[in-house]
Amino acid sequence: MAILRGTAGVLVLAPLLVAGCASSDLQRLQGSWIGQEKNRGIECKVVVSGNQVDFTLSKLGEWYKGAITIDERAEPKTVDYAVAECMAPEYVGKTSKGIYEIKDGTWTLAAHEPGAETRPASLEPSNAIRVFVLTREAGGK
Image (cartoon, rainbow, N blue to C red):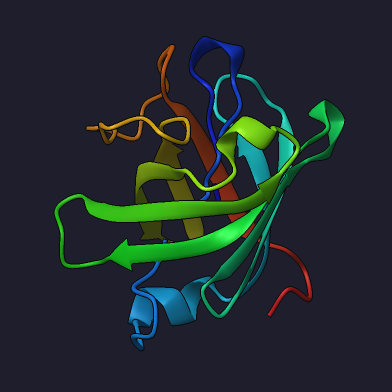
C-alpha cells in the first residue's frame, strides 16, 4: 500500500500507521483492499493486519511485506512503509515514504521507492512516484 522504484516502477507501499498507536485511519485500513495503479491500470491488492501490510501486484510479480506507520494529523497525511520482505532484495530494510487519503470508501496512496529521502507532495503519479487507488475487497472487512 503501497512500494516504488522510480521510472522502473517498483512501489513499496506500502505504506501507513503509527506503530503501537490506536489510529482511526489505521482502524479504517484494516482488511483487504483491491485496486489499480493510477495511469498504468495494473491491478493490485493490499492486506492490512494491525500495522503489517502485504502488497501485491501479481501481474508484475511484485510483492512487499512490512510494517506501516501513519501520521493522520499531517497535511497531507503521511505513511512510511518499512520493507521487511520483497521480491527485490535491495529494498529489504529500507523505508518507502508516502502520502495518502481515505475518502468516500477509496484509499489513494502515493509513494517513492524504498530508500528515497523525499516524500510525494501530491497524489499524482510521476516518473518517481507511483499512485494506487484502492477500494475495500468484497468480504475484506
